[in-house]
Image (cartoon, rainbow, N blue to C red; front, side, top):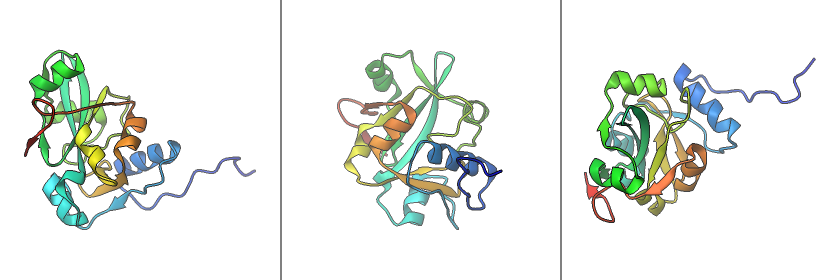
Length: 174
């Protein structure tokens, strides 16, 4: 007997990236996970590998707010001002999560953290600077996998909130 809704065939991807691809497919996201020949661990590496502006790379950064892990999706061109963002977001102080805390919260390693595919949804901010790009790229679970998306799609996927991540009304260049 054939299932009513067969699962789409996924390309041969690492396990973490296959989880991300499934989450994207379930959410109706048209962009496919791509495996790169070169590392995309940093925004600069990802931009070079993809031939795009560094600002079009959506870095997935995990912070702790109190004891709760939170996700900040920031443009590769910007640094997060944790004090300004915490105040804007109405949250306790933001502290950078350790590699172990990142893996525990997301199931993924630093350098490949995707916006989705985590054991549970994390409170999320999407950097308003990402809205300035028609297409952005986000990690897909490993330092060698990415997927194309948009700021609006990231907001929908994560249930996130659109905020500037830097001081004042914008973000500081990296």
